[in-house]
Image (cartoon, rainbow, N blue to C red; front, side):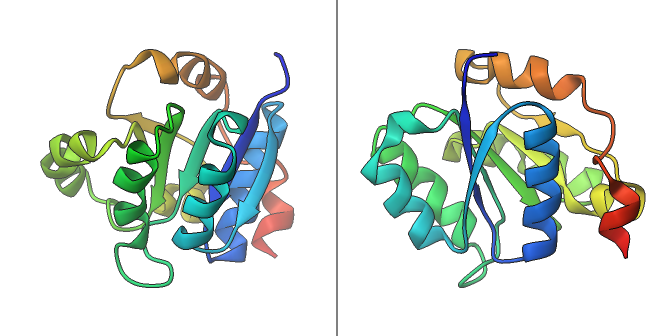
Length: 153
């Protein structure tokens, strides 16, 4: 895989490290910022640098990650955007929100509860756009968080 970089936007160090571990295990280079404003600033400075953005929803305020997504799209960001959230942990909430998330420009969703309880990694894809093709294929091969036992302690 050619060198590809992913931006993690999350104010929770534990979850950011889990996501980083998965992405680095898959061969991606990873940068991390702590809030949505920094995420927007980072993408605005160099939108072509990042293959994807993985973002929490609640950071500097509830919904910060959701508000960030359309801002990134208005800046012309063409990469995949994946939310990593506890807010969509229940299948019924995800199904009801899938259409709305797609309209915002979200491509996929990682459920934090699965990471926390089972160490499982799974992206629920919302869109099947070209920008997600390589990421979908790479992420499909990942079943669990690398070094999970170390992360729980």
